[in-house]
Length: 477
Image (tube, rainbow, N blue to C red; front, side, top):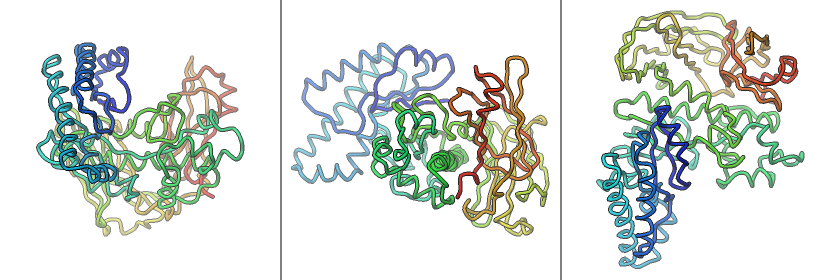
């Protein structure tokens, strides 16, 4: 990722935050602190906002990381599209309705815009997110940025992400639970470990969110065997769903030139849309994001009995590479193996291969999958898998029997994993030990080994005693 959005429903970050973004080259979408509600229109309030904006702009204007100032989060789209705003507008006179809207225009198209133009020119200003800068109704795929929430709030299928073609997707998301270690920080009794328990409902601030996670889960996966398995599956599901959206949006360049998923971090331990939990622990989504937002991406798209294989490059220079395609069964038998040399232009997205159902005639859709490796200079820079059915219909190996070897070289630990059969969404955990893994929540191909580095202050014996390896089918009843 190269951008974070500081949401208008929070607070202005510390100087340290912006210093770090400056140093790392992370762009900041900086919103003023208005998140969803219409604003008062009295002069005293307006002048208070003006002064707050001037003070914050002067404090932050020398940070090159701030590349856009934005007036608010969703106030504009709420006025046009939210049901409660329609009820409110219907309950007041046309004159009052016009005055409320005019107060919005004064604050976000005049006061804040003028402050940005006066004190931090030439950094651009946008009145709201999403917004088309008053050229048309906000939150459309044609102009300005877009927030898309039919996946999640309306329980639309994740595949609906591939029907969206915005110019910039500044918000889309899906929830998961934090890992069990985080959950045990606020839940301790056996009866707590249930998505409908008082404790779990209290740590879910989106009404019906826990049930919505389960509803989506049973569409794609089998019934989880216990609460811990549900937690693990919720993270895998969140990562897979956001992957669908993020890869689709990247494939659409240059029409779509950016996406920001909601959300990065949490302000307390909770089930939420975040990819990093309250304690800084990475969820599955954050490991996935490092792959689907990498500079170069190979991305298959299954549709209409076809698989289009895209390569997306954000690099400023062209690349010469090779696409290695394999059709495997879940035991590792090779049914198709081919390579193709490709020339990848700078900053591009294009289809380089297409497979149709007749090409894959040997494939049992419930026991086979495609593997695509993009290799540059003899090194695999991106890998992606394509399955042919929903997960609960796949005949995945029930016990892939992952073998592991944990060792130490100098002051660095490493673990090597191998499986004779396909192991999906492999998750390493170490109980209550603090361990940073170089990767997690990955697919382990039949017969292939993977070596991961581990960082921890624990001893080798402690790590060996605590390590737990879980894959997708371990979570099912």
